Length: 172
Image 1 (cartoon, one colour):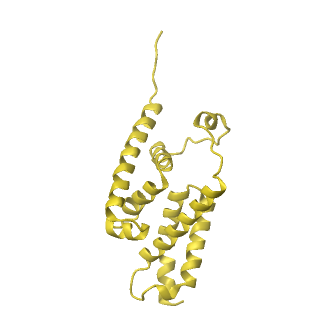
Image 2 (spheres, rainbow, N blue to C red):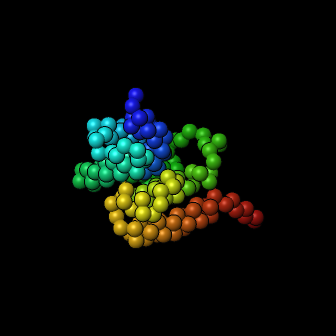
Image 3 (cartoon, one colour):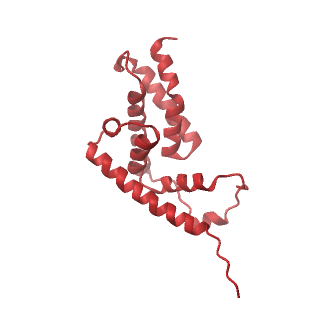
């Protein structure tokens, strides 16, 4: 296996983490990673030898994700279930789940995809603002605005989730 393919394979765990954060569906995320890798391998000439392929791969993945979101919005999205109805659906026991992690993932899911992508690129994947802005194809100021607004939304959502989990004892 040549040097380029080895470098690309090393990035798969990061690509999967980012795709899962964007889509919140393991199968859809794996499909997005596979599509991204397939596109990268067919366009290996576009990657400059000696550079880390990470930025290039994330750019490919982001463009594919945006294309998927556009298709969904044209066709109509998946049906969503209101929170009250979802609570009545049968669910597997969740005693082992970490409430804080679940609250953060739920809050991330609740914010817009643009803000979620910006936060994930900088906070989780460790890209600089300039690198993340280039990957997402937006100005750095727009990226910073999306991150600031996304963080504020997350704070509000997480405060609300913490309040809902508080057990109140009422004595008669």
